[in-house]
Length: 193
Image 1: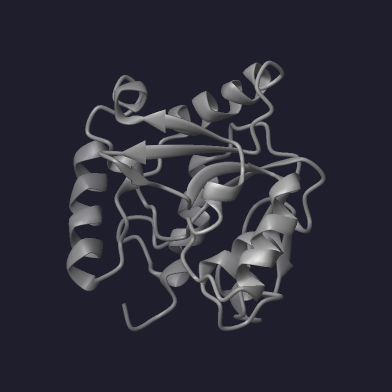
Image 2 (image 1 turned 90 degrees about the vertical axis):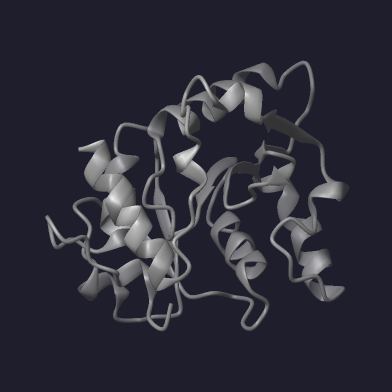
């Protein structure tokens, strides 16, 4: 993208993308919001209306897997993990994933991960803190893929068919990684309004 995606500004409100995403998740039962970023200016450049714990990435130069591990280190149990480049994230999808946590007594899941058209969505998922040692071992072994540790934990996969009633177009999983994708995300947000 050529710049910090968390700081991309939405045209109508002028708010940074990070704040937009946190606001969209505002009605979820969140005990703590943790933002993992190596940008020490982020709290000032993208201020949020609620208490936030900003953490520098403990695992430098290992990609988003290090960010997941850093965030989980601050969580006592379950954590919602979302990337800062998902402008169309739907709270209904995350509400559904959170409800699945209550079903996990019968099956001791450690992760609840959507799989859209066969592709895991590890940056739009729930993780239990018990996956942290597995992630740390994966990082130590040279793993860099965000989904690289999932084969070693108990995962409740949430398939496309489960997601469509909550998000028919599956826009929640639309990443804005390029200027072209950002423009498309803005168009879709305008349609949503």
